[in-house]
Length: 244
Image 1 (cartoon, rainbow, N blue to C red):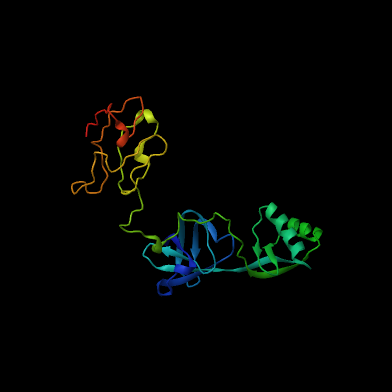
Image 2: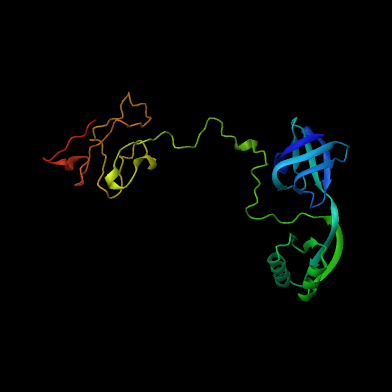
């Protein structure tokens, strides 16, 4: 039995990689692990990291790289309609308040056939009938399922959007802020708020040819005193040494 370990969303499915089709109802399209027989006879073990909602047109990816397309099977549903949009919105609110999966279209709401919900819908004055159709309810706003999905277009390769190695290891302990977290730009003159640390161009550490722009200034062990100071023109006659 071939294992399917990840999901490929509809927009990324390559038809030339599809080898079979799984026609599943709503419940079976929301599983983590399930043995399935595809429409063409292929035995597939769905083995995902977590339960994932599979939509019509998505695919599951086999360990050998081939794809099995997912189709939503027709199933018994209640079709709910109303004489005006306001009444339909009201019944939609009541359905949502019960955390019931619902498919919402411009003209109707579809839910799984449930006699308790059917009574509630009647009480709201809406028309209702049983239908057979594929069920594709709304997903949650935060239901992205990144853990199981392939995202080939999101591969950043060598482009690391990290901290760009801007490590300013100034030991300004008594000023209550750590420069390693400031993500300084190379040409921003190192202005550090209102603490008086204006690291202007006159500052003794130069970004020269030997710097390499790594901003690894671990040698800047400033021996600061507790009386506050500014790096620049305001050192005055009481200048204090900076062991650069």
